[in-house]
Length: 121
Image (cartoon, rainbow, N blue to C red; front, side, top):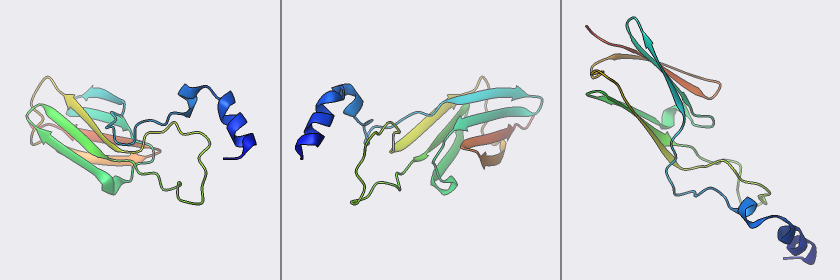
């Protein structure tokens, strides 16, 4: 490492150099709304490809899992600042009633996964 690089890294506080754990699972934030015919769930999943999503319903539990991958970093790139977690994620939501068998309409836009769960009466 060059002397100027060593000086630069000494000036940055150590906690700013740490990258979020790449092997650690993360849990995206979600909003849940009750509707006349079921539920709307919005999950913040910026950078996740729709094909990388797994959505399951079991009893009163909705599970959304997948991976966010970093496609920018490769051998010719030097990382300056890393704050986004790239790894597997899982979000589990529990509802006050059974949602198993609900019809799911899925929309994914602007980094938000929007699920409309239409429950059968």
